[in-house]
Image (tube, rainbow, N blue to C red; front, side, top):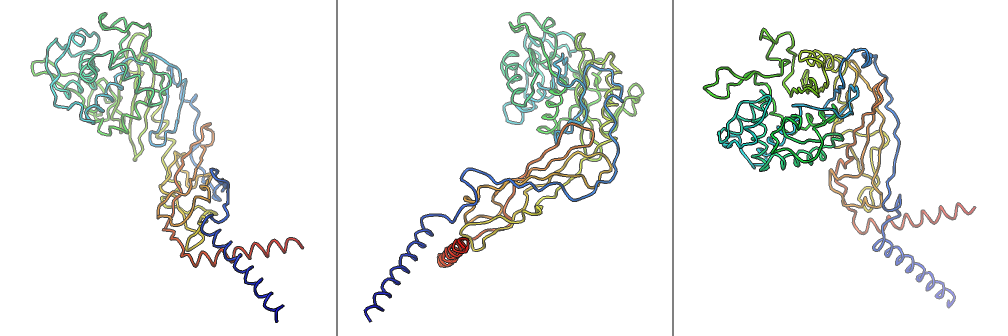
Length: 460
């Protein structure tokens, strides 16, 4: 009898210790993690098991026979570079410089710093500008909108300087803002010495900077700047599509838009040979050093493209070369949605959840993914890489749409060196509720003995 009582006491002590240990594990520590803290688990899902229909064969850039110093073509929503010819060389941009002035003035209106109907008093610097101008006199008064149209349509240097001085107090201070903004935009070669694009020697001497630099900007940087304009100020074409504008009632003739390629010019005798379907901007440029430049943008079938040509030898030539560049884009490429929003990733339909009612929660992507593809492509081969957050951090309760990882999609057009990539979040498709303490207790007991039996089995 004593022997039996001694056995029961020991058994009770073992059970009590086991339960205590399990409760301590449950309360003080999470269940075993799947990865070390601060790491991610990367799963290669490989390429989609689909076949690619024969699409158009992308011609070489050389086949276009471009006679320019540089050129580039981009699609602004994906950032894909569709054509590049010497696109990273810093060159004189001439009046394409004014795109930065246009952007910053529009930003100042957007933030409420100035308004379109605000009166601007013309200063000495603006009144002494040369080249393309609207012949402003010192102390003239005009609205911001009137001056902006003169800048965008007639490339008026005097109107440009008047706006720069309004925003920053002086043109030199505005130039500092231009260069800071260029850096923020990721422009690698751009440097500005004035708001207009004039050579420094053509500026009023009193208002020149002391350094020996000149305005420079690569075709790629000009395209980046144009991308910010069309993205941040989608109403840009309210100004850039104005075909002619009479600045003052007393003016004998209106200023004519230097952009011959405007689609609206298709019925204008002098320009209809250059009018381009869907083209609504953006900015021309010309100086003796820069020759003829043009940053153009057009939209067709819901796809907008931005082209930049620099160093054309004549005024008409910059437009005929731009047509080649834009045709190359519209004839050979299209935007295709390759992944729908709320997509389920094969092999990664769920992620493990600690302390949840269910041990897993369903996950989906948070947004759609689109790539530029050759026209006619029906099933582009997309590579998918999934990264799941450290599982130790995935502890219930977890809200619906909580970020639990990310998915990177990659796609490369055959014959092109650049790989397009887009990363989206992997989110929970539903709420992961926390399990009750008793359920967690039973689960801990089950896991404990499961691990124990597995360990014993491995011994034998």
